[in-house]
Structures are given as structure tokens and as C-alpha cells.
Image (tube, rainbow, N blue to C red; front, top):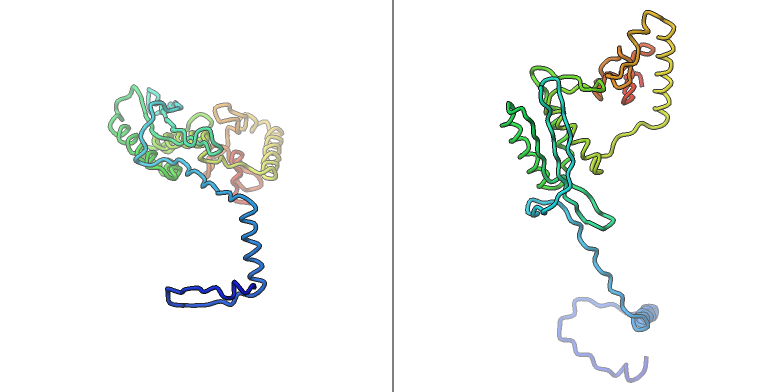
Length: 255
């Protein structure tokens, strides 16, 4: 340190609340840091723009993309048409995402007009509230009709019309990527294929059971004498080795 720097007077205006002795290594580090700052221009990091999300104060755009789903049940002569409109968030960015914004249900049958209007208004309000809206699917699918449910094409049991509306919303959320479709791993799928082949082979050797176990197109390609699966509500559970195994979702009490 030069004599000029040693004789430099420093005026202290504030009370000393602490101190630190600067060693030669600290001085060298400070000097090196100042040299780097002088040598290279300061690059300011631009903050990442905040992602768009759905909230209750979001204004409705003039144009929304939508999808319409048809529901035809044996409990009604006329079909229901469910239209779900989506708002596009973070357009033209890697975070682009469709989010449901509103829902409409239309039918010629006016018997259910009042509760259908109430249901659409509530669901649309939940959509516009934002956040995770996937919880509504399980809530709607858990509604049971006191008069009993029905089987839709493919052998899947529907406990009520509201439950099928919930399934339509679930299919839509899967289509836009908000719900991931559960998949069966290759090992479990291989076991199901082996059980299906063994089941068909056993029934083929018994002529009296061939007609009852024949594949039925109305049952989604599963054996006609298959039982209802308690997990996926599809008539695809077959009895193998004293245990029912579902050929649709793989559910088995033996596993």
C-alpha cells in the first residue's frame, strides 16, 4: 500500500457496529472482481415474462376454440350435445396451453332444462376461476341416479347422466393435455394378452361355452359373459384361476 493511500483520511459519520480485517487474499479477490467488471460490459438478466393464467377477472376473447361431444343414453329419446370452449394461453410460446373457459349443454328434451342450465353455469364459473379444474371430473362421475344407471356402447357402466357429462369433460381435458391418460406398462399388458389368449383357448375346447363367451361388438370386443369391473366400470372382467381380472384396465385382486 502506497504512502498516499496510508495518509488518506476517511471521515466516519455513522456509529461503528462491526468491523473486519481485510487480509491480502481478500484485497486480491476484490481487485480481481473489479478488474472483471471493468474489462467486460455488465449483462443485465432480463426477468422471464410471467405466464398467462386463467382468473376470474380475465375478459372473454371474441373468439374461442371449442369441441362438441354427443351423449345418447337409453334413458332419453333425444341426445345431449356438450360444447366446451377453450381459451388459448401463452400463444406462440413454448408454454402454449388450452384451458377450458365455458361449457354449454343443448338438447331437444326440455325435462332437464333447469338443472342443466344450473350445471353449466356452475361448471363454467369453475373454469373461469382458474387453477386445477380436473377435480370436477371425479365429482361428477361420482353422482349416482337413484333410478339406476345404464350401460353405454362398449360395455361401460354409467351410474347417471351427470356421470357421463363428467366423462365427456374428462375426455376433453385429456384431449387438451390437462389430464394424462393412464397407460398399462408393457409387462402388465403382456400378462393381460396371455390371460385373454388362455381364456379364449379354454372356451374354444368346450362347445357349450363357445356361444356364451363369444366376442360381442356391443361389449367393446370383450367376452360377452365378462363381468363388470369395479374399477373402470367396464364389462371386461373374466374369471381366470379363481380370480377376476379386467381385460380393460388390468385390475385384479390376485395381483
